[in-house]
Length: 98
Image 1 (cartoon, rainbow, N blue to C red):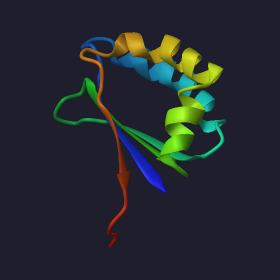
Image 2: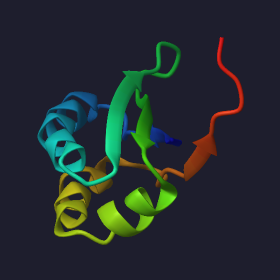
Image 3: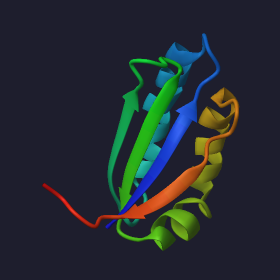
Image 4: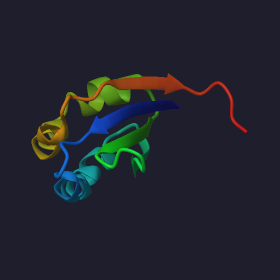
């Protein structure tokens, strides 16, 4: 399993609109082959920042599968205009668990 990690810096004052758009967008990503799970959390200290964690079966399922799909184009239309600056996305492989 691969964990995709992104801090989403939403433009202050646009949080409610972002959350509404994300509610529409999450079904797009959840329908993709290789998708396992998704979690979106909002920062307590910086309420305009969100932590997106997505589990994928592989990096390729995310990078080639989702990002190369028509669903990703719709995802972009729904969400990308909320970010300033644009988030950095990284992939992690688990090395320990308690």
